[in-house]
Amino acid sequence: MAHWLYKSEPGVWSWDDQVAKGEAGTYWDGVRNPLANKNMKAMEVGERGFFYHSNEGKAVVGVVEVVATWAPDPNDAKGTYGAVTLKAVEKLPRPVTLAEIKADPRLAEMVLVKNSRLSVQPVTDEEWAMVRALGGLEP
Image 1 (cartoon, rainbow, N blue to C red):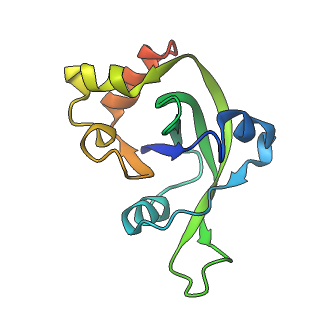
Image 2: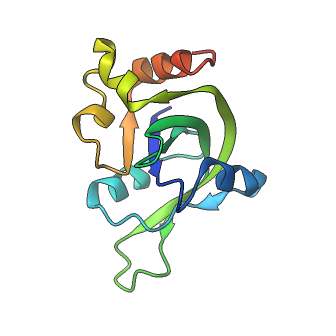
């Protein structure tokens, strides 16, 4: 299964907001980048990703899971963009900051380092295990 990273500004949608949605999760809408949209179209139910606070905090703070595959965004009249539905799974015992990720040579090729502006991005199995370990979770 693939792994992902979802970026959100905590002032707009935070980890606590995501947790509050419970098992039903929430539709991850508002993404208007073609590559991020393509990434979401590739997702399958059960795949997990990191929840990343951007701008404020700049850190991986939790793990989310895809509970529904891509569906068109009803606010996009052209039907080009859509989203998946995500639920919160677990909070990292310790947030993993962007500075930490950039400082670790093993994570130098991570999309978060190479293309930090992409709001929905893939994470390799190796990166997944390393970031989870840095955050205090079992790889």
